[in-house]
Image (cartoon, rainbow, N blue to C red):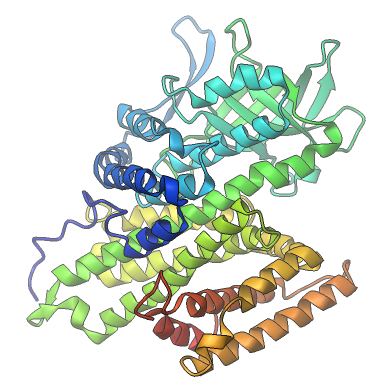
Length: 523
């Protein structure tokens, strides 16, 4: 064997310039009037992510660089201040200066930017980005004029101590993802504001402003509230940071345990709307971001494994030419390409809008996050012993960050329930089925018979299961994850076959991946 001296990984590369598939998708999906300027912006952003932001993220994830909690000043006054290293703050600031990163920028552009950012792992940036995005959306759609005027400028402000300052404080230790079991209580004041009392267990990115949940006194309804770190007079709100969590991943941003002790809060919407607003706006935004994050991390894993396999010389030839390594790289690509197509299909459905998005958002949160975990593991195996070294590649940190994407915003079984709920709705189920049939059979009956046969079988199976779900809406479904796996396999095959030989895939290379996907038992 020959020692590796040239391998540097993907650091320093322009992530978008290296990504032929996503570039082709963008060239087709961008509105014609905005295409040139949009692609130029994203090209510059891809270079920034692979360059200076990537360098800062690496520096911010060295020992001794993680956020610390400073509870008191030298006079013993409570300040509950998070202290980030300069590299973390600058990385956020560099990203946040790009106004297209947040609403009202079109979803296609800002989710592509999230995808590019996540090729550096979560990095302390993309979780705050997702929550700030969701908070802006909920304020724009359901905030009062006074709330918009006061709080939106803060969320866009790049000069605050920690840019991308929005947060979510929902989870409580007794309920986990079951928000209906929250115990935090809210008492309305004579001026219409509220005071919250209770403890929140996972509070990612406790910055300057966040959304939270609480039950009004005497009610079991869950309301959605807006909580600032500081009051109008500049004093601290009664939000006490008890400690920082010792997470196994996504360590660049702080996650805290907090206690409300009569904290000032403002209601968003009506109390009775709380759960609907949380699920339909805030958590939906986070779940779309999880899909983008997972896809970006899977893409970076494939890049690292491919570059390493080309640089590593074994028995006089690059390791990439050895059948087992070539098979590993092909396996990652077989997962990655349909996941990329599915993600951009989700974005298109959300932008139209198409009721199929109600199925795609929870389904792709499950499936793409699972695929990404598997892709990072496979990439580390390509690097073998070097895949265990934190100072050799990003992969050990990616493996920690990517698993958290599977957990955050609802684990697989929870999101499977949401997917099945969407499949029970005639409009969203019909919209999803339309994606599985649109423009496929007529041109591919002879070119990909096995894949097409499997797709027809999966489609029929899904139609039958959706009908059964609608016939008995309250029935328990013990195999909900299996149904989601079938739905994703059908989606993958449909998109690969639809695009084969088309503008995105003019050489019909997707047909080979479709045949390989058809043979796979499950993802």
